[in-house]
Image 1 (cartoon, rainbow, N blue to C red):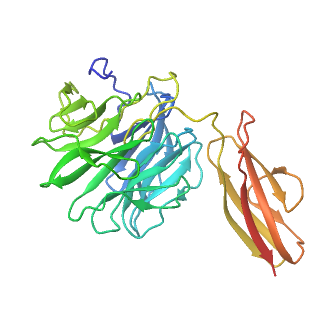
Image 2 (cartoon, rainbow, N blue to C red):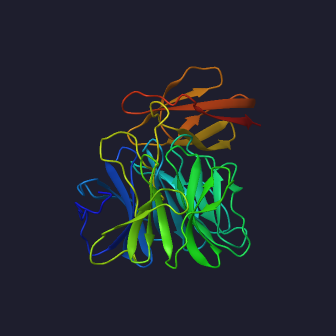
Image 3 (spheres, rainbow, N blue to C red):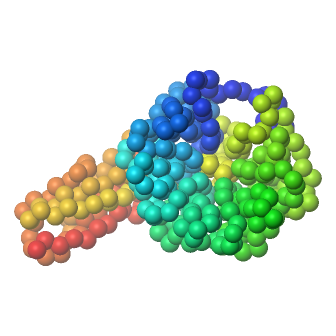
Length: 350
């Protein structure tokens, strides 16, 4: 608990397990597990440590920094293929092919999703230093918030209401301190001023406190400069390797997204998000490849002015007329909730 009592070891294994992140309802934990130094994957388990299972573990990719999307239907993570720099990816909690959201030649990592609109904060080195960026849930509109020359800004964490982002910056004479800024990058404020190395800020589910690692301790305090600090007893190992992630009580309602920390109330019922990944045209045949967030979803497809009909990916449309066409794909989860904004894609038969 936040006072340091009732410590529970959720998993005991021979691997190095780290970077834990709680689902918005607090019932599931995502974490990175090291099979070896060059093989790191994302795993899931129940909040009590049961039902441990692999989500994604490609031996050619280092997957780490998991964080849940606001609806709990997908996990964001940093993926580093052996032949390129890391990007931020999204994969459904039921598994499947990850979607590359940043697709950039620089190092992109440490994602955290805003609970109210799904915007993703992440770290990128594309300006030469590490900066905090934000982007839309689909990877669009990637924007640098913290371009400070010669300084490193890392480990972003959205506040529960998504009005602020906590992060770590070295701009104070090279000391890594906790900072908080507005969601648009304004009012960048240093929260800590110590000789210790602060890391991994995470918000309490109600937004009243931050927790972070500070030297040998994990500390909680209000997100304002000079606020009283409360050290947490994290056990005999100390906090040098601690990576705190504040989680809601399982089943208590919407809570924090993972990676950096907290989240806030969700806006209405959750629903699957449909994505058309590609439309391949061969002669008068179009092959539509699509997916959706969450597990156990089904799909309905609509071509041009026709009706939505049950379908599965890949969907083939043969003997199409020459000219323009439009396809729509609608995902439906296992409870019958449909994506209110079906994915759309236009294409042409020549």
